[in-house]
Image 1 (cartoon, helix red, strand yellow):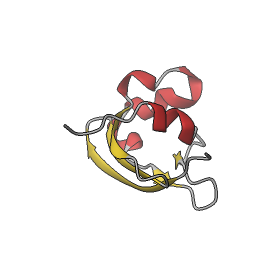
Image 2 (tube, rainbow, N blue to C red):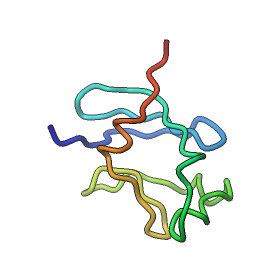
Image 3 (cartoon, helix red, strand yellow):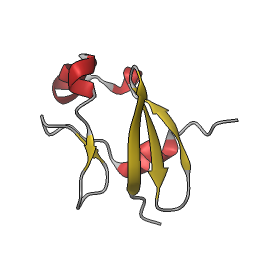
Image 4 (cartoon, rainbow, N blue to C red):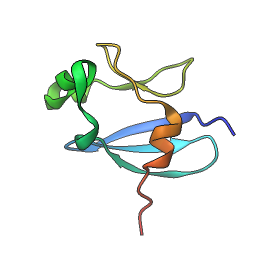
Length: 81
């Protein structure tokens, strides 16, 4: 299956609540994923909060062209108990 994000809402700190096209829904904490040249600017919360769901790619993207593959995000979703 090809995963797509259908909705994303900021929760707090570096956590985003995601809904996927297969019905999976939960939170991803990206704090420990913000490494490297592209992701380092997102360590500033003001920049991190600028994410959106790309209308064609259907994954999280930021104005500096940072993005995460939807398959990666799907794999790290924490489902609420």
